[in-house]
Structure formats: C-alpha cells, structure tokens
Figure 1 (tube, rainbow, N blue to C red):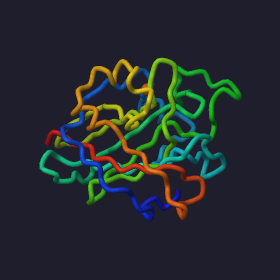
Figure 2: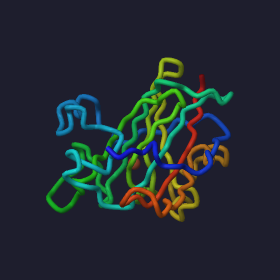
Figure 3: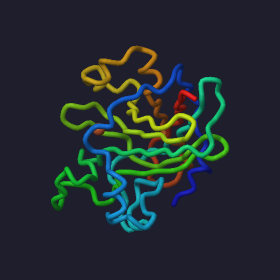
Figure 4: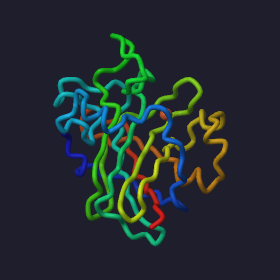
Length: 208
Ligand SMILES: [Fe+2]
C-alpha cells in the first residue's frame, strides 16, 4: 500500500451543501459477493490500483483521492465508512453482472475500495481517473455509513468534464448539487509516487 498520507493535496474544495443522495446504480458489489470473492481476506482496501499485493497494477490515469466527511457546521466525522466503486479503464465494473472475458476487463483494477475516516474526517484512496462508459459521463460511486447519519449513496463527477452536459443524472442536478459532487482534479507534482497522475481533495457534507 502506497503511503498516500505523504502526498500533499490541493486546497480543500468545500461543498456548499449536503451531499445529494443519488442512485447507487446496478453495479454496487454487495457485501455478500465481496466476502466470497477473490479479495475476501481483507483485500478490498483503499488502493484500487493494485491487486494481489502489487502483482497487477491498474491501467488508466492513477488518482490520489482524499475524501473528507464533515457536517454542515464543518465538524469532521471520525469513524465513517467510505466506499467507492467505479468501472475500470476499459469501462467494465468488477461485478457479477459484468462479463469478465479475458482481455475485456482490467485484472489490475480492484473496482471497489473502502476505508474508515480518521480523526481528521478523511480517507485517502488511490484509484483511477474515472472514464466514461456508454450513456454516462465519468463518475465514481460513493457510499457513506455512520450511526449519526445512517447511509448515503451518491456519485462524484469530474469538474468541467465535457461529458457532464450530456449526462442524464448530471442534468437533473442544480448548481449547488453539482458543486457538492464535482471533484476538482489537479495534476500530481513531479515528485509524486511513480504512476500517479492526478490528485483531488473533496469534502462530503453529511446531514448530522
Ligand atoms: Fe456507474
């Protein structure tokens, strides 16, 4: 696991309002399936770009993603579960509903990752810059859980992505919701870990 904590991040892009709840879509990998799958023994970690302890590395543009969970008053939430899932660089989800024929998916991409926020309310994930798939603009699904607010599913978009304007879910969002869900990607600095191309830091405001 790469020490993501050592990576400096751009200025926190504070969301203006509570994270809008959005559909989790058809490709959320259930806990039951995950527990029976190839990474059952603790392998569904926060680094989606490595599989099998570094045996395979993900295709695509790697992204260091820091997500901070906070309430409306800016108080951070410690101990929140944060899950993300997205398709791989070939636009295939790691999910039983998706075909995984040889050469038609990326075996180096974990597809799903999870972490628990620390005292600063943040998790540090490593994944790939999301790519479009037929009918959708690039997005990362996210699910949060904590006793104070229950469970929220939503989707994170890439700020200023040209595909957003044509996305049926993005088009339903008002400006405030879009600001709450749009990650601002910054190029990784020259001294970033090998292979890292992008960085983003985004606050997720929850209704506590
Ligand atoms: Fe999706």
